[in-house]
Length: 542
Image (cartoon, rainbow, N blue to C red; front, side, top):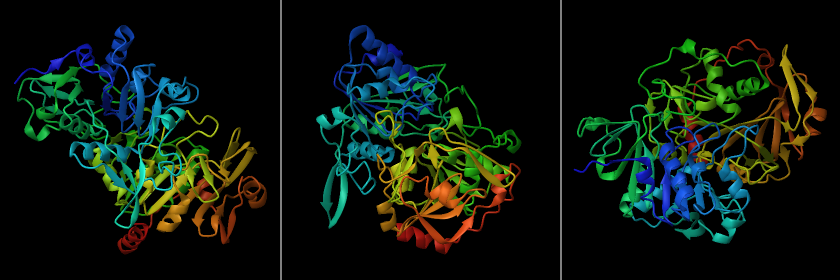
């Protein structure tokens, strides 16, 4: 066999004009950043490659130093981007270059749920007719709404999803996009091109994207941290076989995740002691996360999203309930402790690192028990926007796996603040105090972008809860219904009058548990999960 090791510059030179380039990454986690940087540098020097279509199931890069797709965010280099999510970070940092290109209509941009993009790669590889799915019906994915299009350039380019009738039912159809180049990543490659992933924090969709490129007659470029002699990697450890790898780029400095060179607990090689997880500082975010934790049951599989919800695992650790549930996150970790901050998407002490495409299949079919997610806006129908910033609609991190997760989830808990724009609140002594009210209502007549359809959720019989600092609401036939208010809060003045849309009030309205509003542990005890009840709920949601 030939030696497949090449420089990053040589790999970049292999990408032709007009190619569909698929990238395996999850923000700063397992991002083939050095290879993507070489592509951008080649374009700056030579003006090639041009007019690429980027196909990225999860965001490639972030705003903290791992630039990912931002290396390619140059006018003329890419003409179209189809991504599950986009680089993101705090508003205090400059917007990613790809966001600015989208806002200026310099690239036709589409936001497609991450799981569907992996499905598209598999269907393209198998020469099937494209993806037929119900994931995304009645959300922004649906062509009756936005059809995944993010800007005017995408609307001018055309549709990538159609509404079709099949076997007496309504479906979304995503035609195939044949991949000419796959840029993926691993840890170690031998000289033949067999790749292992022992230092990676997630087994993303590298195999699926490589299959799509290989079966379309394209090429596969795999970036790794190190190389070894031919045949030195045990067959049991090979995640990507040599038959799917054409070229190997070596970057000895590749980071495991953003600002994390290497942590063996992330890749499952060692285990962190429970005492090493520092308690979450007292905050209103923490009290919201505590209330969300009360929605859990023991011995359940729970999906976890970004934002306030990501604090819940730490709440369980502090309450002595660290093993009460099994966390499942879209990057593929099963069990352990999902991490926050720069390491979001990784988990320490995971039981397994499941390939992300298979994790999405698990989510799409509703095989888990509960999902803890965040919201930007909620409307009168209970629909949720988490994918488009209301004030700056072209600046968005996208939906990621949110739509895949929520379509058939039996139970969903959305967490967030009741208002925004200057809100100042404090909690202590068992009560909540509003020191300055927010100027922007987050409960509105109609959300600007439907990432979760409340109307469809009701039709599917999903159990949907919205947790805020001052109240808890449920999605019911009569509409959004306040079922709990915080101690210290006046229902009329602080809730009903501050909502931008009418709310219903439950006849058995309760006070939120006062223990949530004190900094000390509150004695969380999760009720046992009812297997029969969970099965019935899942069947109803399906």
